[in-house]
Length: 582
Image 1 (cartoon, rainbow, N blue to C red):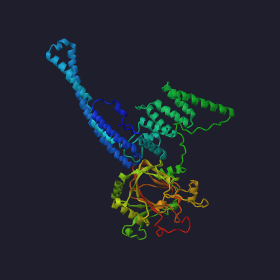
Image 2: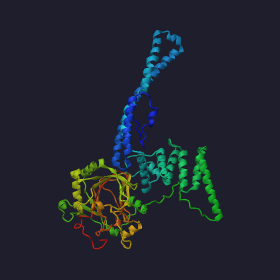
Image 3: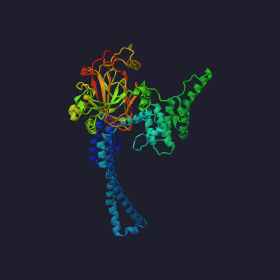
Image 4: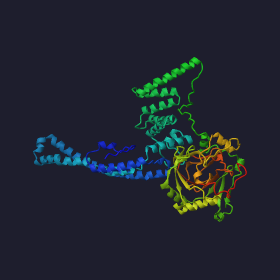
């Protein structure tokens, strides 16, 4: 029977396997096929969840123990071979100096025959003995749980996202100088080269240049690496050319050729770059002015301006993530208070009212303290972890759920039947907000991975709006050019998402803030607290000022859970207003 896996390499390495151990090979081949077929059908995406990545630590620990056992076995085998070689070497020194005299002794003659007939065969078997059987079998079983090439690519992009958002240079990242971390870790020249290749293969020449420069710097400092200066210069010169800096591309290519004069592609590139510069010079001379496209601004260390992308409020969003640009005036800040809240004498809060703190005045955003206990948080994480799957977003055109690069996390949905703690937490959120959870969505738990984020988005489903209305929210909607979307909640029959209740289930050492770019508000995670805001005005119209984002996690593991309350059932709990913005 012939078995083929469309996308997984299973049997490529078996061609050069030794002839011995046929049964072992067939067993391992079966294991490889089973694990690879499993891997073909799944997408691990480990980098999207620190919670699930932590499992890899224990898998690697187990493999290290298995590897050490193999090493001990191999060292024992080599020790025996070494002793044998030393003994035979002593014998051959004596025998080769006087062969006939040596063999004249009948015992020596017998032992020579015995060694060549039996002992060398035993040595051959010892050399061919497979000490790696246990390790290879363990590795084969564990391989199905390993990160994929997509994980490695996603992890590299996560580092680049942190680099951009928090304005970190490549050298800082390479040396592992992150705030709030208790571990020291650094990137080798090969690691930096790999980062540059990921960017290059993605057509991202901006990051290609940043990381190839860093790789070249570390190679120039004498770091041992399998990557070469020639290879780094090859990528770097082409990346610089793609960014429009012809003169520096020529300079880098000349350096490449000085290291490898036979590099054919570099020679062709140099002639092409020089031809472009010559044509540009002639055109400028003919026109007596500079009509060429301006070169990108570059400073002495070769750092170029970051290209614009699809997100209109990118600069504001990232500034807020760094703790910059909060626009609330002192006068407005004086109107923010802390209080004990019993939600209009709710029986559940009479004895132990919740601690409520104003985070923002308009739209009103409040933080509740001591909402979840450590025991409740750990139980929720325990229930969610096996269910975690890559978080999705709704396509604004089709309403279909899909994964997206601007939402990097894993999430799980928990029902009240999963554990009494879930029911208790749901009742608590209902009591605090004064809204019914009968029409609310299940409790969603999310864990953010490397550089985990959710770029600016709305929690509510956007509806047609009147462009003539002069409300601040609709001006933003017009600016962002939002059109009517499919009613993604129509099938639920519960109306739109009227409010968001967001629980922070971990502290985050650096990054990971919840920010509102249109407001200038940044709310930082604090374990056991929760924030709450309304997504809709009392009229049911969406409040476009609530567009918010989860900033990339710089250091730490961010766990949150949230409850989305819907319109239906709130008619008497939050009555309609008389105007659109009530």
